[in-house]
Image 1 (cartoon, protein in one colour):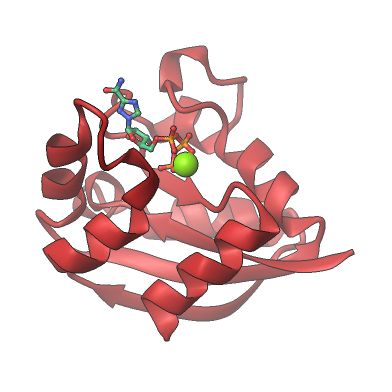
Image 2 (spheres, protein in one colour):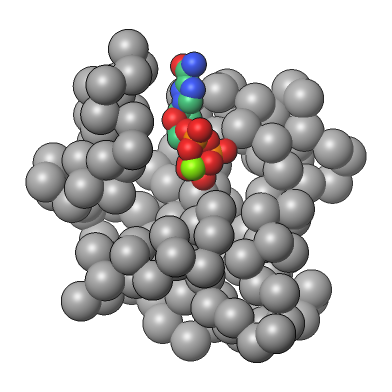
Length: 133
Ligand code: RTP
Ligand code: MG
């Protein structure tokens, strides 16, 4: 099924000049960039984005990381895009992530793992509203 998913190229990646390399991974796997912007996320937007983790011990660290410097928000479109982009990104912990996943290649740690992608079609809809209105 043709789907859309919300991706963030997170601050640690933009800081290390990895935007192009990461976009290349998605594009060469047949995913289409249909929306994209470079921006500094507000506290409110970051908290809304990660609302499901509000009660977690790492929530404050997560929001402060996501807001510390600019990130790239984008929408990718393709067949089974939600599942495929999660697979390209790899697992939350870069050290556990499969070879050639974006997190294995570029992730620094669990806290600074370089990319985000929606975990379901419903999350994608919610997150596209947050970042693109
Ligand atoms: P994301 O939402 O960023 O794509 O990551 P994910 O689905 O793989 O992982 P999720 O469970 O949604 O966690 C969101 C982000 O919170 C940070 N995290 N820190 N134990 C910890 O310190 C911890 N656990 C999760 C990660 O940066 C993760 O990307
Ligand atoms: Mg998640």
